[in-house]
Length: 578
View (cartoon, one colour):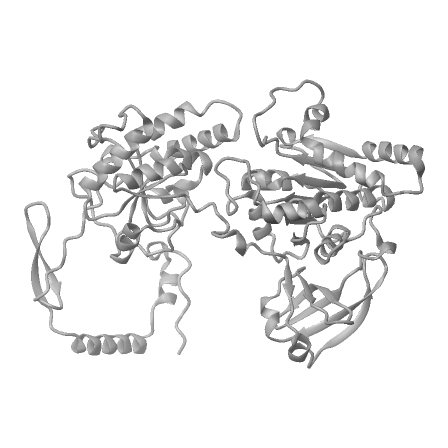
């Protein structure tokens, strides 16, 4: 007999009619009692064991084995007062890479106490809620450093102000006794994944540091707090989380556990980044061609393309808009297609438009390799709203994007303007403030744009010198150069937006840019994750990696990792040997 539905509201608010509806039938109650009685009879006899309570008293608890004494669990309070008991927390997945001390603490079932460095809060203002069931401890010097960095219009200052507002909401209406003993629940503001508690440093006495460490330095004061916490809680893992490598090295030199902040990383290894392509095995058609369906449809160019509906073991590993290819044997035509649909255990593959042929050139540019042909297929597809191209220097990312943008703006009239932007992070020393308009200020950062425009303007060899100059002026009139500093609040309608050097943007900045897209706008993100100049950003935490991972499999997004350089034989050889 099926059980009745669970009540939709707490029992103390149920009406008599609702309470009667949730009551079990008499025969079900009798069966449950009979089962419980049988289970109780099968258990070993319960004996009483006296366990010290830690406050000078003792308590008697039931035990299944009287010969084994229950170990005393370490107290979680920050002071000598015994906190009220709380129900055990469910063990969740770790949010940081674990040191040996952290792993030992996890195996024992005890939660950890993470001491956050200031740079973690500056880097990710939501890091307070990223440690799941573990507790967080904030030293007073961390709060002082946050106060010193709250002024200004930079992203760091905005993050600091966000952290300060969050801390203000957490400490609001909190009793002082709870603050000193139990800590502040981190799920107070609705963050359900944060099951730990927040503690502040209330005792300003810290353990003495070695003589060679200056006590007036903020990093060393945090290390002193770590030593004090470890001495106060010997049975608990106390771990410092910092983005500062030198800080972590000093902590480990003192025998303290320290870890990097990994929660913002999309990937632990850049080699795991989604490539956007999939090579098919030589026996692909033998395993996937039994119940194949074939038909023809016109693509967005009006050219007839062949579609295949296949089923087989490799369908589960395919992603929508992923490019698949089969290495041809001698004398065979290569097979290249794009995954258009995945319907359960079946996938629909569509053959590609061949941009390697001269008659299909894009603003005079033809694809020189397989990956460039893949890139042109998504750049020229109006159904793809966001494109990400990742590759080393010389693979043609900017040239392909500009050629596709100009063709669709000036020839197809699909968009009305090409907008190019990039983050202004210098490789060496900054050259200082520049006078002029917005485009004049951005011109030193747009050397790559000028180089590619020169190539595109020379693509038409029959136009002559005067014709090429006219073409270059026409191109310049339809390309706008914008700064990232003025993007907030804007909406781009019918634009072809190119974000160059996107690997230097944070995930938050990428969200700010992509959410500017209005109707009819296409966004192209270009970058090389091996050339990151922004501090605290890595290949795994870059905004470009974040976008590639989050848009993977969306039917209106496309991604290609360009692997082969086409700049020159000198540049290709230098990239391999230097």
